[in-house]
Amino acid sequence: MNTLLSIETRNAVLLEMAKLLEAERKHIIAINKGDLEAYNGDDISMYDRLKVDDAKVDEMIKSVTHLASQEDPVGVERFSFKHENGMQVYNKTASFGTVLIIYESRPDVTVEAAGIAFKSGNKILLKGGKESLNSNLKIVELWHKALEMHGASTEWVAYLQFNRTETQAFLEKPTQRVDLIVPRGGERLIEFVKEHATCPVIISGRGNNFVYVEKDADLDIALEVILNAKTTKISACNALDKVLIDSNLDNKEAFIATLISKLKTFNVEVFGDEVVSKNHSVNAIESDDIWYKEFLDYKIVIGEIASTQEAIAMINKYSGGHSSSIITKNDNEAKTFMENVDTAAVYHNVSTRFTDGGQLGLGGELAISTDKLHQRGPIGLQHLVTNKWYVHGNGQIR
Image (cartoon, rainbow, N blue to C red; front, side, top):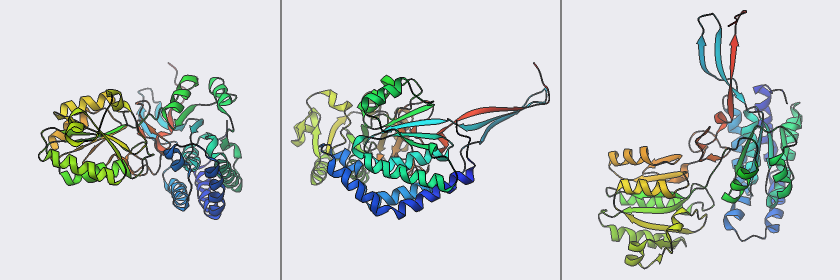
């Protein structure tokens, strides 16, 4: 086990990484261009996540710089107690030890996830997808350079160049100690990790996010929110897939017609439930199974619902437990919705696209957990720790 590095060293390595990313910017983008050209899949969201341009490099630099400015998440006192026998008891945060991250196609995760794990005192094992191999190896090379420049072992950041069979074998019987696994990617990846892992796994589940337009909604806000949540980044897990519209909404038909025509200007394919498809000549859904589906594509389903209670029941049945939003001017309806919808993030008159560690004030995220243990929603720096009891005395026995 690597001895915990001082917070000064951890921060210095992060700031060094920011400098190296800037210095090697053109080189990283050129190497990534090779990965993009070699990618022969037809998954547009995968291609989008694989691509590194100047804006992505800017984000990587911002991520490590921000991490360096944050408080040390290790050794934070969470509880203290003075025993009647004079013992002093503390509970403090402690790093997990070794964290394995398995992810697809996103070279920026090689910066952000490694940065979060490293800042919180963990050794990090990175297992990226084959489609981004060269980009990832270049970034790991920069991590090693940054570590060496500050007298730290390169073992803090390791890249596992495994194929699927080797990954499965490692999950089932790790050749080194692993304390936590975080899979970050599509449902197939997450199922694969859950099936084979022998140590704790934090599940970052599917999106399939809902917006409910309640009968007292501000229709301009509803349009803005739906268009933003659906079209700004279709590859994001916080993107929108389903819209439920209160059947008692004023000017409902005109609103739905406007919404459909605006979605079509963004080339979004619109599906409707029985009522919406009949009234607005859009594709009717073939079966209720579509309500479970996360699209990660230019597709959306619009349906009508009779009340807030029914919207809550529908979301709790079909959503991925990620994000949901209510559009309404009625604060009581919003309160009922937000307290009873079982998703990691609930919104009132806001786009679901804000479920993100950076946007919610965490400065970045390792993944977005749809689990309830030990952290739900974006996993930031302060969540990548466990805890430990420190007890001081002078000979107390029980």
